[in-house]
Amino acid sequence: MSKSKYAVYGAAAPYFNLVRGALDNLVDGEHFFDIVADDVIYEVLYELGWPRIIKGRTDLMAAFRGYVDNIALQSADKLISHKTDDGLVIEYEIHGTILATGVKYDNRFCSIIKIKNRKITHWRDYMDSHAAWNAMSGKK
Image 1: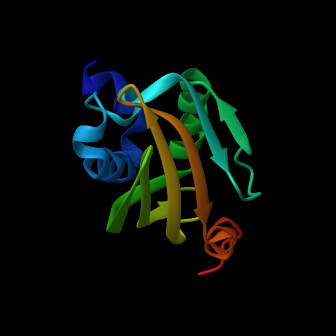
Image 2: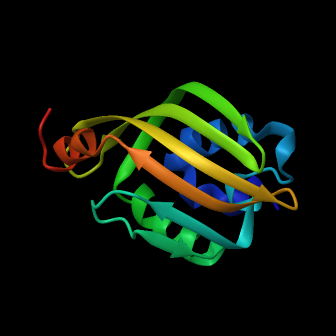
């Protein structure tokens, strides 16, 4: 699928590119949404308005549509990868701006990724909830 199909998600490109690069030859597909299974489970272990469990690529794309309507990422970096028997654990940081307030947003994540048949089948995410709360509440 063409990257232009995902142009609406451009504000999250640094994140998508970091993840795609981290997974390298473990998965097939060019864009983040191409490397997730149709029935992916995307689980987040924090409470900040994002659904705790997202089932399926279609719902994941809808959730990210809301994300890019509110946050523009400038970069994603400090990647550390840990291979596992069935996937990868990645640690990384993202840097962006909350669009409604102009407040800078910097956060750290740890994502546990399971892969089957060269697609992401399960994603479990941990982040610095305090950093997200401060950015969303307008604190600098």
